[in-house]
Length: 382
Image (tube, rainbow, N blue to C red):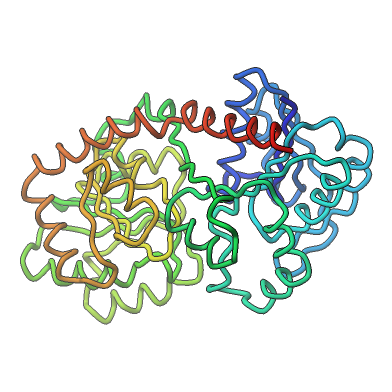
């Protein structure tokens, strides 16, 4: 097949919505398909692109950014001359300028399109008015017209349904795990040494510091834990996304300054070191459609606790590979953190179950095969 992937930005700094098309393109090319990625030059990462051997990545100049829409008019000329050669189009993220333009040409040549929103379809958070304008002008029509939409979990299925996408159009395919990147793990102790962590137990949160990530919930639960255990530290590792000052104020309010460490942004190598040195990872997000962090932690041998209403929670439950807590239940989270810290056998069993589940269900070659089958179905039905 000749496959067109469309993503408005193409850099690992943009998380799953860029990593997914990267991994799909890499694995689809290995399976013998001809893959092209259309993107913009906004925060473009050349090393990221260069590592995609055999995949053509075409960045178009971003002339303007309007409310998050990266406007790249030069994409029109390319599409006018080349769109007819593609068998299938896979659009990533929902409200983008590129989707509007690409779909216009795809419709003209009757090329099937698949949309993967990566959690962006809901209007419930941030820029609600702009999202509404986009949806009324073109977004609703796009959702109605594409062949299928991909959800990574039942949480995201519900988001599509709330946007009036018919259930029969929604296909659930989770994100994959690149287990090869965990084949050469660092030795234990590197992260602790670098950040001068001497406590017996280390609790890790890894991700952006955003209000929807549940950091306040975790800090308050940690404060409760300290009334029962004292040789423990909470590490909040990740860049600020508008919530750092609020998190620090809560730490100050609860007199936890010497018990909570903010690292800021950490590199990919440091993430592995953090996973290796943590005794438990807590992923307390709300409204998260999936979340790779818990599975990465499991791959490094560290047990996890996740909220039951985030997308990865349904997979953690299915695999029996971690504890689930209800968002906001401070006492239950405290109890389950303590259970793992004081009973290493519980964590070891969770990790064993998780690694089996990842190997049998979540590797990129397996996920890519499901995507490939979906492409073939769409082409045959057009």
